[in-house]
Amino acid sequence: MASRGLRIVGHNLSILLRTHRAPLRSCPQLMCTAAQQPNNPAPESAEEKSKKPEETAEQLVAEKAKLEEQVKEVTDKYKRALADTENLRQRSQKMVEDAKLFGIQGFCKDLLEVADILEKATQSVPKEEIKDDNPHLKNLYEGLVMTEGQMQKVFKKHGVIKLNPVGAKFDPYEHEALFHTPVEGKEPGTVALVTKVGYKLHERTLRPALVGVVKGV
Image (cartoon, rainbow, N blue to C red; front, side):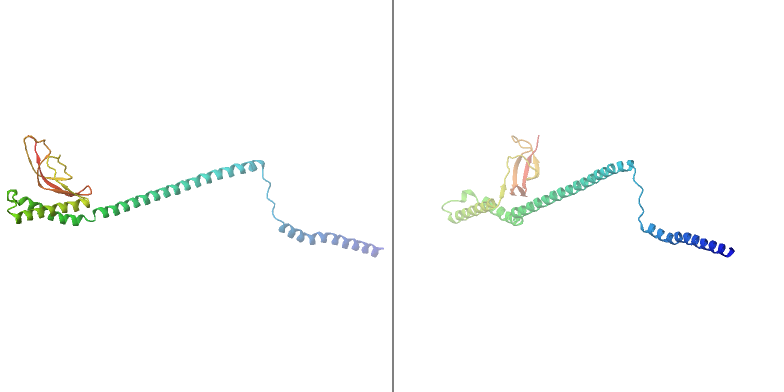
C-alpha cells in the first residue's frame, strides 16, 4: 500500500510539473510576437483633430503671402531691368545720332578760318575800284564773292549756320561780349557791333560771335 501511494504521488507531481512548464516555454514566443507588432499610437482626441485643418489653413496663407512677396520682388526687378535696358537703348541711339550730326564738328571748325579769310578778302577790296576798266580786280573780286557764297551753301547743307547778330538780344550761349558801351537809340543788352561772326552746327554753338553789347546809361 505504501509503495502504491508513493507511485500515485509521483505521478501527480510529474503531471503538475508538465502543466507549469508549458506556459514557461510559450512565454518567449509571446514576447517575440509582441516585439514584432508595431506600436499602435494613442488615438487622437477630438480637440487635436479640430486643430489640424486650422493649422493647415494658416500654413497655406503664410506660404501664399510669401510667394506673392517673391513674385512682387521678381516683377519689380524685371521692370527695373526693362527700364535700364530702354534707357541704355535711348542713350546709345542718341550717341549714334550725335555722332552722325556732330562728327564733322572738328572739320567744320577748321574751315571757319578759311571762311573768315574769304570774308576779309572781299571786304578789303575798295568798291570804287571795281570797274569795267579794271577787269582784273573786278574778276578777282567776283571770284572771291562766288567762292564765299559757295562755301556758305556747303555749310548750310551740312547744318552750319552763320551768326551775325547785330541788333539782336545778347545771348551768352551764342555770343561772347568783348566790351559794353552806351549807344544812343539802342536798347541796353542788345548787340551793337560784331567783330567776328559766329557759327552754329545743328543748333549747337560751334563758335560764338564776338560782339560789343549796348550798355545802359
